Length: 200
Ligand code: GLN
Image (tube, rainbow, N blue to C red; front, side, top):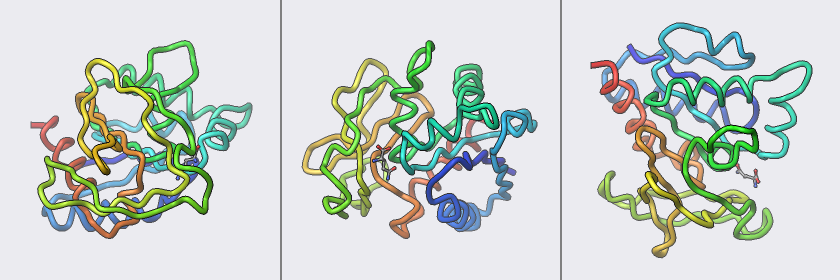
């Protein structure tokens, strides 16, 4: 059984849920998805992995840190405490891990430029090189950020025309595209395998 906490602040949460379900079925692994809406949800015991969907990082910062809901600072604290827990952060999720903009250390050691390819009209799909996964992977880029720098401890895992579009730092995967929208389960499978590995 793997329990995946899904950050429910914004983004294609349901696409992540169905991709996680298909990936777990393919692996023959029981899956429970814990929807993270408030800091209390983070206290659910045995969260084995986190998925942090994209969306709009400014909106996520606003909806995740206000008087009604302060999930975002609680999530950052939780991630700093549970530093081995596997994480898949996509697009705006990757921006927030790299640039939490709080007083703590970044959750992945990189800097990003938001909307690095331009506006919505410059959204695109392209085949990526992801050596760990083998065959090329279809990357869906929606108002995607671009890595400006990649620091110590973070390694490139995915490239597009030689430009890094995904990094891994320990068990945290941060990608600037949307693996939940490409119909290819391999990133979610990777996350579930990392989560399973941490338990054994
Ligand atoms: N452009 C968005 C931002 O700056 C990210 C887009 C996405 O998550 N698809 O937060």
